[in-house]
Image (tube, rainbow, N blue to C red):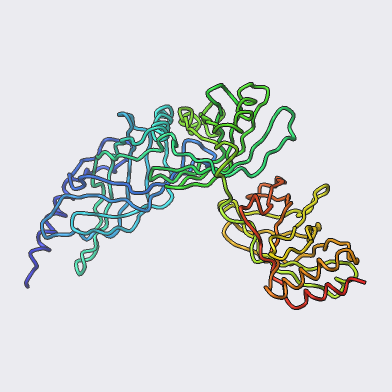
Length: 480
């Protein structure tokens, strides 16, 4: 029988690995692991950590890309197709916790092994709580941070006609450099949604900010808060609910409560009309309800620049588009027409709910835009309290609703309305502006009613083309 020399060589490698394995059962929390030298280095290209479990010392971790560089074996690629990892994290020479992953698929090409592992508990050792918080602090504040990974890998080999073989306890010890959050120093102000004055001596600003995560870490942090100050002193607290960070851009809702009992808060608002406002967001004793995470966040200090008069702070997209008008059988008697428009979230991917387009005390209306010949009509229609909808952050919804045409429909305005009808007939649309549009909405399903400016000016729009059909001419029948 002819036997391939590579098979013989592979058998010798497997035999040498098996001989190097300790006889006793391997425990990830002990040092009874022999480093075989097979695994030379490890790179973790992505890692997720979830700090929201009830036990703060058992965060959940996972990775979709782990790459190990193994001892090069000329002409041989080890047929490993499944591995199980027993990892101890060591930071500043202190063992802080261990990860016991389930079996996960693996692939080997030459001396490179690629794998991943699903959600698995990182169990922080009882005597390493302070060291773990220091580890979180380092990842939060530094551009990079080295961590030692030591432990063992159990590997399953597919030997083809020779069957399968499991090699337990292939020891390793290597240093992995994690890219850190670097104090989230690239935080950017995007948009002011609304301000709330309901709490005496406080002004609450709801804003959208972009937290740029420079690391390869995906972090689920839960509710977090930061002490907020200017160079002049403390101004209040900024809070973010259910903060989840992925690598790159993260658009988040931030609520900043400006405490007007502090002079620095008053100065911040007063000066914002003349110059940019520079805020410093700092971790403090109540940054997180998670005690392990809170201690780590305490050292974070992130700058945030609020532009002068909020200049350049714009919606991600207009909240509406594709407007059209249709007359109804009753229009000539009740002066109501049907508007159809498509609505979408202007808030960087956050879902919205329209509660009211004309809340009590609000006068929301549309005016006629630029018409070369002039129409003599200013206010075209008034919103009624009959427009409601919900839409996801990335979707759109088309809604039909009634509005009230603005009179009087008498001889004094007949010629102007005829000019408007003639323009609509010739161009198939009428240019309009939403001159006043203070909508009551809910953002991100938080149950808070917010009054927001959706006027054409706030949306950065010029004339809106309100499509009209042949039926628009029937409005003239409303005149005596």
